[in-house]
Image 1 (cartoon, rainbow, N blue to C red):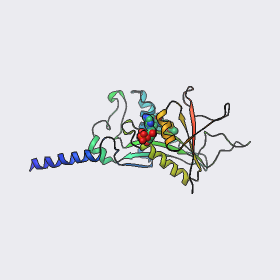
Image 2: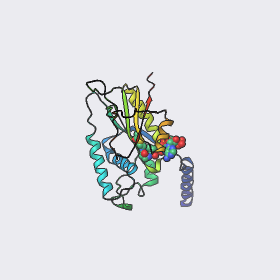
Image 3: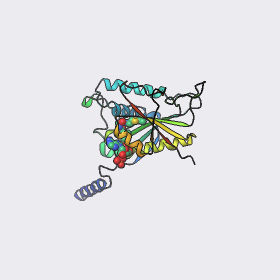
Image 4: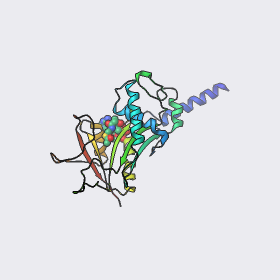
Length: 234
Ligand SMILES: CC(=O)SCCNC(=O)CCNC(=O)[C@H](O)C(C)(C)COP(=O)(O)OP(=O)(O)OC[C@H]1O[C@@H](n2cnc3c(N)ncnc32)[C@H](O)[C@@H]1OP(=O)(O)O
């Protein structure tokens, strides 16, 4: 009986392997982040944008992100901001990764990770338009243009269409906010991300030389493409 049960399990494993070959992502749901996702959002952000840092600097970075995220959700009146997460089904992760790379505690492999790994990707979208030139002598904020940032997918979940899903969800959300366009800054030296946005229909906006066009505050040597996509609101 034990033998047949063992064979049954083996069959199930191979069938599961067939159903989920390594190139296909497990079930992914894209939704707005909840408070309990905060640490994993910070972790996904830091491991994607600062992959080279090790303990204790990476821990400090994550705390910094966490604080920035929790405090950054207050926005000027009439503006919207939200963080989207792509989450994997936890049962899948429990079955395949529990106790291994997704459940690391401080300092392991020289890096700080404390999560079960449900968040596979993140994206922030807002209508604050801090990165668009203001309008008129009163320097009023532009309206109806959403802005995307912090798009990141954990390394082992990349090239499975997760960023595309996050971008599509951000566009849908922007439409519900009444936006007619969505914009972003993309590092000129990030060909993967540029390809992603061009593939999703974003166009580079040529910023006139010397224009007073606000840019993200990163290292001074970093150069950005400002990209935009008109949203079909019909
Ligand atoms: C506005 C911003 O926030 S820009 C910052 C972008 N973020 C980063 O650079 C952080 C580190 N990188 C990442 O987190 C990821 O690699 C991302 C977000 C750039 C892409 O996430 P993924 O989930 O892997 O993208 P996804 O699988 O949806 O790819 C969609 C398309 O983008 C393009 N693409 C994505 N990554 C790459 C890459 N490394 N090289 C070439 N093309 C790429 C491809 O055209 C791809 O389609 P394909 O797989 O059918 O060829």
